[in-house]
Image 1 (spheres, chains in turn red, brown):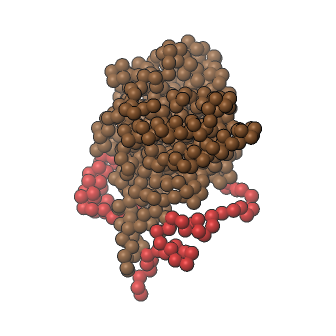
Image 2: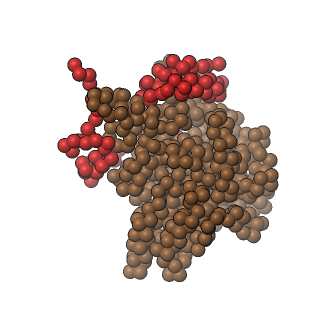
Image 3: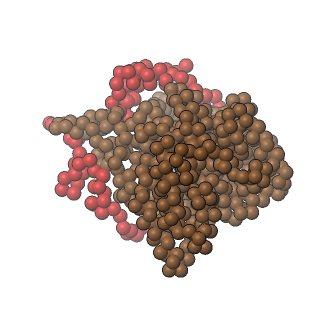
Length: 98
Length: 498
């Protein structure tokens, strides 16, 4: 049986960039014990000789003609921006003060 | 007028008996009358719909040749972007967002003169089987308002059953078109993967997502299918081949000499008695119509659900990373000096609901170093085994059939706290998405024990979507002559309904 501790879930939530309360972390860790048990069944039949399928269509390198077509105007692209400045997306600080 | 099929409405429009403006207004009136109870819609575009209808009427008056469904109204699932119209995907993180472009499906609808009434409710980012995961409250099943309308496309299916729209667009990642169709007594089709463009369909699980038609009759679904399908250079996974002749197949409804394979593993234990009874009855009707019924086995289908709940969350954890509070949508905690990372963390905490968070975390785990092979890698191998099972089964049969879901509609709230019980709803629909083949659900009657609709599922090989329309139309005709009236004529009247 696989289980994920509260701290394991907290680490995953950090990787997924989702803040979570302690109660949520504990609840998820309990649920995951049950869910992981159920999904781990895939290992029963996934032998080394079985090839993996990542996608239903056998597509490779799909191209279209390299021609200029109309695209979003800056105003349209910025139309849903939470904040903007000088026709650009305004975002919170990404790098440290140093 | 609103109880007609879309094709009946189309002929009345073509003959000039009714105008698209009057038809659209009648549906808008029905939405006003019943949607407080049903809650199928998240946004109704009254002005836009009437303007589209007036434009179609004007073109018709000027003698322009129009598409078969021109002037007929439609409800659009809120996961499909439409320029300038709020698109939330049932999530708080996109509340108030108005997309700056049209999805290819919307472009095709507009090209065909189909009038878009508004956007329908859904489980947040299409993750769910009951529409209870919408951040804007659940949709209620018009057959019994205390029950779920299925999900994730519960709004689209409910709008058809409540006569708010004769056509709707759904999307199906693990059954989100077919399961709502089954529990609302309507028709829903998941085309072959790649048959309908995904451009402008907000991605949940890219290798499984497929948009398709929802309607009240098989022919209506076929007409809508033909209107939205076809190759799209904007979607690299769109199939560059002619659209299967689905309308011709639905019109002919001929199953003489066809081999119909009953999938042994998608029946029996866990399936409600009324569901099994209606299924057996439909098989007898198809045999009487000239089809040969054979049994097929798909031993790996029992692993499909487990594989799906690894593949879909894995792809979703990656796809939903785009909701980062930077370029559009909700932004929380952007105070002086707050870092981008803390803004993302806070925004995603507030913006995503419980099921979405659960799946993102599960996917993050399944893809993480050290666990990838055991989980995501193994699930991909199961996907191969399921496709092989289908290939073998299609050597013995032209189409495969099963009940669409194990039970009829359950009560709102009944399974909300048990994710695994909820996931079991999709046990018969998921294999189709894993292999990328086509799947249809159509009503096969009411279960005796609860008087609620039961769905019959038809599965067809890649790009042989016409076959499921042949079988669906034949079964629909046989059931209609048995019942004397469509199944939806049994639906209880909603308060205020026209």
